[in-house]
Length: 256
Image 1 (tube, rainbow, N blue to C red):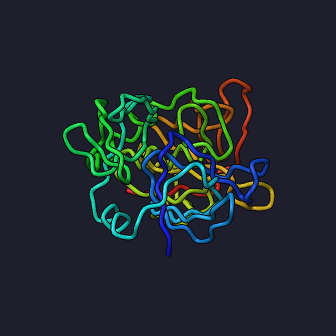
Image 2 (cartoon, rainbow, N blue to C red):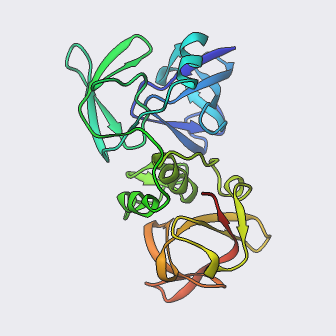
């Protein structure tokens, strides 16, 4: 088995080994993974965090040995907490670091990615947070534009948004809305929910295609055009701008 780590800010993860194919997710700086198949220009990988698979350009990661991979698996994850910041190497070269990026072997503002040492002066998240913090973290992404496969404030999709909010609070969600809907405990009514619980929505074929984070007083924050706040009722999401329902409620899940 071969292993790798992302050494760039934000790298597309694609459905096929071609730059023109669908971006299904993104790999952020410091994320490590298994290499399932390596070709001349592309590698199929499985991310360690959520086991998500896709193709990544070989020029956009570094290979690491099994010992480093296992060390990363057994080390507490430290995450960048600034919306955007930078790290510098020994030559004072800058590398942008988005919120939610992993900071491997972080200690006293220093981190090590494979064999390269960086200095990072920004704020970090080091431990699990109370459920009440989920909404506070979610607001960091408010007005971020919608981007299919995106995971950052510069472009994010509905399940990338929920996954990153939970990740920044120290909890693991799977990548896609349908996968996330398999996690947690089912709630029967909106009235049973608490801020931070997840609401899932399906299409006409009954497939779960959307997810958002429930707030107080029947509001929901979700990525639809942008990360926005709308009303939620037993029918689904009521868009406050268009004054109509946009998503049909399927199930509410308590994850924490």
